[in-house]
Image (cartoon, rainbow, N blue to C red):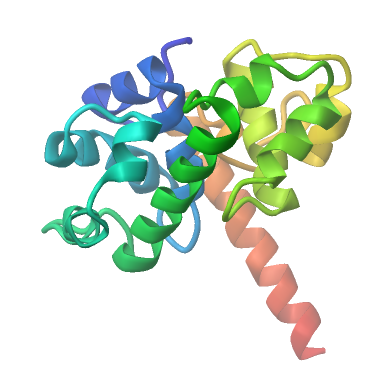
Length: 192
């Protein structure tokens, strides 16, 4: 795994760079919450529950996991629902993928297959799966045949659409500007 800078914090980014499950959970948490905070949450989660493995999180007492997500500080705007979703995803990873998150992409022969594997996870709709596939391709060197096409607009080289494009504070700002412009355009379209 490369040296990621998604959380904009060296310790948190080290957790993401070293642990494919942490990276996958960060993507799961990246909704209705600032991008960099969603990915930074994994370092705090590891401090609170120990090593982040699918088996550990799948078997963790649900209420204790909710407490770990609740903090303070909270790991997400919706700590209970996200703790439960993370646990459901980890249980599925244990049942279907031997507890190894990276098998979702390592075992796949095409970008479409990676996308389908990601979409089979709780909380991963098509858009989130495409963003994560773009992140894998752009920053982690995971480039099965057709990955850019499967990632859609998020796979385009030089885009600033999502966390897949964040490599430093400047690109984080550019992605944030893009998202704000998209929200503004959607709001204007809805009001007209």
